[in-house]
Length: 240
DNA sequence: GCGACAG
DNA sequence: ATCTTGTCGC
Image 1 (cartoon, protein in one colour):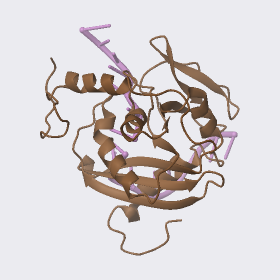
Image 2: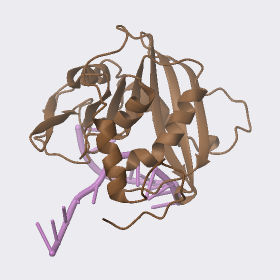
Image 3: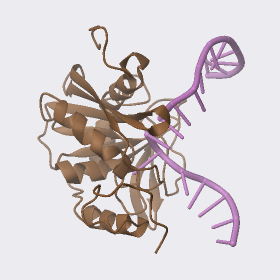
Image 4: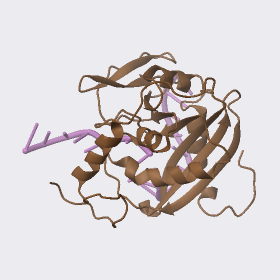
């Protein structure tokens, strides 16, 4: 038994307050991840989600963007804020960011057919990164797009855009290390839920627009970083 | 035992 | 993640 985390009760029903307890819950959720394609093909709406923090982590801010899949044009976006309720612990990131992600998803005008989340999908020690956790909880097809790996080893992919090499962990292939753009560090793309490893990488490639990040994640990232949006929108300036 | 460690 | 301008390289 490890040291209990200093948290207010009621966050996780039935949780014993220990890190081992959270890990046990992750194992249960990870068993529910589906690694087969299960989305409408072709999808009509895509969504990009990202989370940031304010006031040294006291406040959690989530940004969500809804895009038209065939044009990659944003048709709606939302930003929500809420008090942070869980500390940052490597490997337990989803428990810190999930509440805000679910809240911003609920604020979008329509349900997306495929979601891109900033962070790992199954490329996690217990195969439950934020994108996988989000996918299992919402039931939505999800892809995890991370800028850095959490675990696993790999041989760097070639320099040409589209080049990819497997990220391996404990004998399993958990993500594609994908070179989305020349001269840029590769992305770590893994299935979140109801998506195949190859489909995940394919959709990242086909939603690129000349930047390192695919449009869904890039727009959500951009929106989540805008200082002007840190506080209640004073001016009603268009978001795009 | 030591180091690494998504956001 | 966050504190933060200009600057070097392709």
